[in-house]
Amino acid sequence: MELGRYYIGGEWVEPRSARDFPVLNPATEARIGTVALGGADDVDAAVAAARRAFEGFSRTGRDERISLLERLLALSEERREELAQAMTAEMGAPITMSRAAQAEAAVGHLGAVLDALRAQEARVSLPNGDVLVREPIGVCGLITPWNWPINQIALKVLPALAAGCTCVLKPSEHTPLSAAVYAQMIHDAGFPAGVFNLVHGDGPTVGAALSRHPDVDMISFTGSTRAGVAVARDAAETVKRVTLELGGKSPNLVFADCDLKERVTASVRECMFNTGQSCDAPTRMLVERRCYTEALKIAKSAAEGLSVGDPAREGDQIGPLFDRTQFERVQAMIRTGIEEGATLLAGGLGRPEGFDRGWFVKPTVFADVRNDMAIARQEIFGPVLVIIPFDAEDEAVRLANDTPYGLAAYVQTGNLARAERVAARLRAGAIHINGGAFNYGSPFGGYKQSGNGREGGLMGIEDYQEVKTLHFG
Image 1 (cartoon, helix red, strand yellow):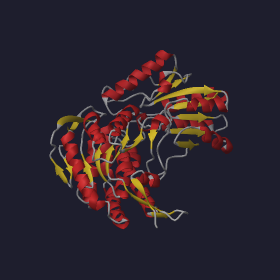
Image 2 (cartoon, helix red, strand yellow):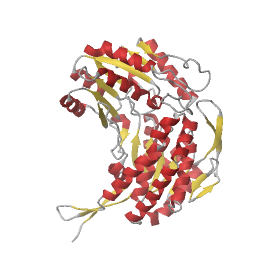
Image 3 (cartoon, rainbow, N blue to C red):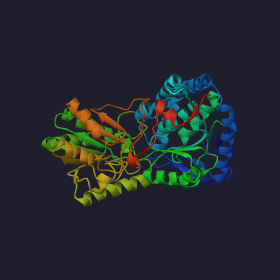
Image 4 (cartoon, rainbow, N blue to C red):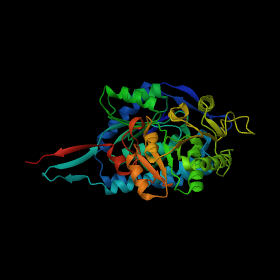
């Protein structure tokens, strides 16, 4: 396992064309490694290996694939700490959170994929006598982000392997450590050579080469909406399947009949989780006006009660943003919010007190926000919450849906009938009611510019399958 090498055809090999790229610890700004960024020649080699392996792997029986995945599950449990430490070092996830959520995803998603694979019917008889057969789609290009490195790798690699596909993974160049560990785990699990391949690189070079490649049958991408549009354009010429999991500006509707202190406090913490670097974070809190003043007091107290600290230390502190560029973007958006006239309720510009290095940001809350402000429209991707008042349920739904995104939405209410009624009107792929969390095996994906397709569980496997109809005479 080496960052200067790629995993192609069952071996760690030297890149054919590479540029050095520094891997930095975002808490200290120290260089902790160097990754070799590849080019189109490396993609060609990896795709060729995947194409050769597809002929055999696509015909393996379900039991054989289950056995391989079970071995990978055992390795995922054994090497969970190594994955957690890698993600803490490369993207600043606090180690306690990294163990409980970031690394745990390798185990949780795999268990759900195994359950779905065991339950899926390989052949379905139609009432007209025809038979539907599901088959692997082919060679898959998988492009994953830096904010949930192993979570997104697992959500793409595992269903592809479960379906009988072969794949080429391009992880974020900013988080190569955990990806390299995962590649070695797949090797150690005994998957045939060429079934899984890893090439490091940036989006405009390796990502584009994968998306355009004529021998790649499917692209699955997670990242920004802007980059997702570029991937879809690149893939269009070869008419390959494209699934996208993109940005979000998720609304959180807080009604006066909820347990206000509990739900607002929890909502602030949820927004700040992973330093706000989650595409489905509840970053727009819409609060019923008759409890608005009290909600602001609670939100301010909750934000000011959050600690920011060294991600290597155990605890529930917030870590840094993942790099300088993101730090500067978040600072610019906080400045924009102030200039737009929003009320700065907590946090603000600059690093927290006591920090003179590392990409740490103050947990920030804006009140009295209008939904047409930039801080309410744009995905900030940092620990920044905006709060908007509303008067009636219809207005809350209108404001919630007034966004180009539709990944997730949140509803806080003591009235279950209202929760169901509002959820039915929200244009989002997942609705979290009174703190309901995502569960492994459930589909994850969004409406509108948050993407298309669903990851996780049975629907995640189906994204990597073609349907063939047998007509019998």
